Image (cartoon, rainbow, N blue to C red; front, side):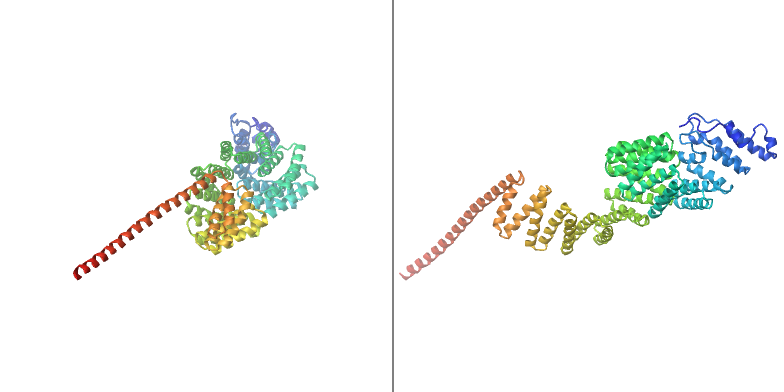
Amino acid sequence: MQNNPIPSGELILEKLGINPHNLRTQFPTREQRLQYRAVVQWLTDYKPKSDASNLEKVRGYLEAFYHLCVVEDWERASEILFTSLDTQTHQNLHNQLGNWGYYLQQIEVYSRILHKLTGINNSTFLNGLGNANQALGKYEIAIEYHHQALIIAQETQDRRLEGIVLGNLGNTYLSQRKFSKTMKCYQDSLAIARQIPDRRMEGTALTNLGGFYHIQGNSTQAIQYLKQGLLIAQEISDRQIEGAALGSLGVVYRCHKDYVKAMLYQQKSLNLMQEIQYSKGVEKSFRDVGAVYRRLKDYTKAVECHELHLSLAKEIQDPLGQRRALADLGWIYYLQEDYDRAINFYQESLSIARQIKSDIEGEFLALFGLGITYTALKDYVKALECFQQALPIVKQIGNQGEIAVLLGIAEGYKELKNYSKAIEYYQLILILLSEVNNSEAEILALVSVGGIYSQQEDYIKAKSCYEQIILLAQTTGTRDMEMVALARLGSTNLKLGYKPQAIELYEQTLPIAKELGEYKREILILIKLVFLYLEQQRYSQLFKSLIRLTFKHWLVIPIFIGLLFALALIGIFSVIISVIIWGLAALFVSVIVTFILWQVFKTLKNSQDQGA
């Protein structure tokens, strides 16, 4: 932080043409003299404390500006706003307020002087109003101001200002995910920069295009443009553009999982942004460094970075920055399974996003975060509420987050055993996935649908799902999902009574399971085949499966021997029981026969005695 970021008050008074010792002559009315005396006092007598904030350090100049506005001395008021400060970037006062993150103060200053002067100043102030509102997430208001600034710049044929405004307008469109408009603004700004020429504008435009191509998923183009922007920034010693380019390169490398490079670029960016006191850049750098730590699963350092981001955003009264930091903290605590904390942070983030009103992306991210957190807590009713609220918002944003939301809704209904609703949403997911040609995600959705049909014992529909998965998996070479689908299709055929087909499918599963090293699945399939071969009286295949099963895992050998021993014992026991039963039966029959013969003998003997 600079100790003396602004020139002395005496120099400013001299520049303004105000003689503090001759106010009565210069300004005839008492009201004028009161206001100009206040201007003199604020510029010369106000002494901020050594540890004062940047805003406090320039308070004397802002107060002088307000007093000049009271007497409608717009020229002198404008001179104060355009005073160059003694900072590393040497920005004018009104621009430096934005660099420090004092967007509300910027808006207040611009609103006081807007349309009070003719010519180029109005375009500059309108552009500043657009930037400040864009930083606060008020995108529609920002676009309106940028458009007004653009019209004036074009009417006055100020090509430099036109290029600057186009770049800022592109930033706002990017925040709204209006990609075609973003691209046109950035390309037009680059064309103007090269035509004038203006190296600073060119570096800014190249850096903006690099960030844009990254969002579009074109990493090669992104790195190319960002490195061009970085070279220009270093060539002209523009540390703000340099920091932005470094930060964006770090984001690209992070997404490619090159965390060493990502951290190197992010730390360089953070150091630069802190040196030049560019608050928005510092906020972004803290966030990006925290994201790298999160990917590295160093959650302690990640939390530290996001808390620093949150603290800075609160200090400069940046609601958009606060919303982002809170959402990031919610995500980290979700990853650590600290769900209560995650919910608290997401709810705070949601509250701020709704206060901003135009920040629909922030509202969506908070609702989605709450949805997945409630799902983790198995509170599917609350999860569904959040996902249902997020669905119409994500449709406005127009990204693939819609599929993730639909999946959350489908899974919620499935867990609540509302299978018809679950299938309805899975079908919507499948339609969207076919449109974006995402076969892997389509396979996962079909697995879930097939599982639901199996739970409902609708095996014909389940069979159809698994057959579709096999075709998709074979087309995309997704061997693990092909194996899962073949195994499930085999089980489904078994439940339908199609045992030969089940055997064939299990036999197709075995080599894939072996190829992928899925030994447990291989053993389970072999066990199923053993019983099926036994039932189908395929003894040669049964013998081969038993031998293969025996040598598949060392635990299988003692189990198999134990099984044979148990069967032998059962056999011996059965023989003994049979002998006992047959012995008893024979004895019983012998007793009965003996008794009958004895009765016959007695009857014959009695008859002989009577005859005698």
